Image (cartoon, rainbow, N blue to C red; front, side, top):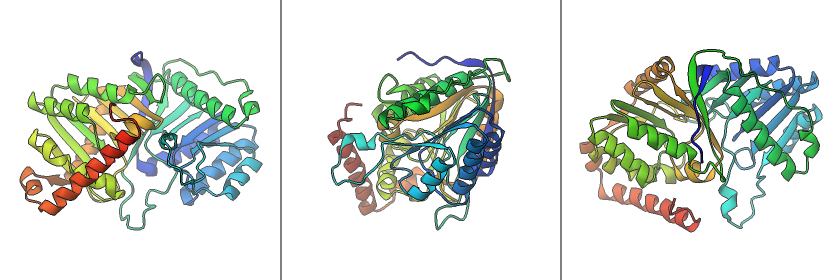
Length: 385
């Protein structure tokens, strides 16, 4: 794999949760005149989903080529009626690896399209971790889901547009919808729109299988002062854990902001099995408990930052299609760091003493969950990775 190059001259805007993201996304859809690509893991037809679906239908009805790609597992709850209504309005809808819920468990069923990416007229794009779903969709949510996306303008659009168009063409061929790819593609302008250096890093199951993990590892290895990493589902492999520990040992402040509310119990308890080793290495751990943490971001040395869809777990790093934007810009990093610092101040600090004083039963449960996940990973053929 060739390492992704930074592209100069971009304007990258940080969007905080759906409160900022959905109005910006809807506005961009309403402004589109030629072409829209929207990829999402979850498309839920709640108030937010209905609002975005209506915007897509309006665009299609005024002659825009609208391409909606949803994941077959993440969006399995989207009814056929809603999909048919969008198709009838002229929205082209494809389902990535449609799920039929057979009882046969096969490895390919875990290869999901986990990207959250949108491009309008190849002139504005969005990349991040936010699905098309209400910010407070969980029954016990008292605070909005904590997440980020970025709005992109500038030369990086050419790469984002190419990635969206490529995946759409692959999906269209699978469903024998070649006619949905015949329209002349919109050409992205490479004119500068700002002063920020950025790159698009994708993970797939061909040439870019380890792109995002290697990008993290290289940046962690280069860190000299501080690493702040916020991740919803944190279950890194040995190399990733060792990289963080080595950074802490050479005097880097390593801070992890992790999920404090249990959403998926197996994964949540398995993550806790790693806390002791991480704390022993001098890594600080904070749990966000106000609402559901869904962020997948990091800031290193107040200069390097990333926002995207990739968690630090086997699903994202070894199986799913993911997309992150990496930004090398002190102004952007300062804004993201400030937002994370505020969240850290509101989060629960996990101390080594309190963690080691937990009951033996709880510790045993954590390790049982951890080894179950590792065994499952090995059975699926990903143990070496």
